[in-house]
Image (cartoon, rainbow, N blue to C red; front, side):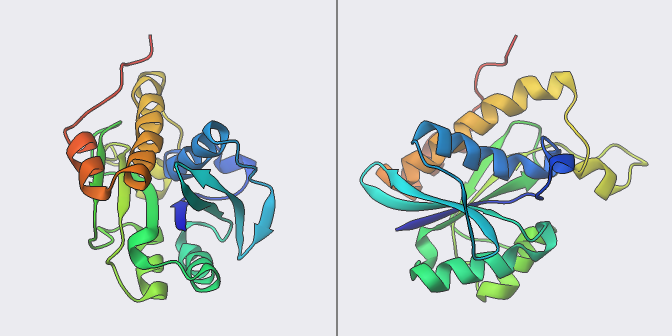
Length: 194
């Protein structure tokens, strides 16, 4: 079984913000695979289903970003998820809007949600998919930037990136992590929406 965790903040006021792209990938996967995201347990909104031939649990932690590790720890302990089958999807200000990076492991890179997950699970050796949201403009407060919404031009890049990230999850599960990295780490972007 895989646990696929998209990071974000719960609540309508945070919907469609830069910090919530992880949530949006989970919503896309749920839609594509007919998985209902209605159960509330382990401090998360969860849905169980099948992708390819693998059982999966889709997870949107409801702890707010900085407490994401509480939910992830409960999920992996309850479902006995090995670290190599924990996939975390989150926003990254060090990547251009719409770029993807898949890694087998790594540091939090300054992302508070990832810092909290690593602190709770006790390792950084698990796969992750980072979705570029672009660097904050000079003079902006970081919190204001990540909790802000995408411009019309950025939406043309981020929507295809969400689709590609969901495809990358499918490729990891149906093929393997290396194949997904080879395919999606090439600054590959979907066609911009006109």
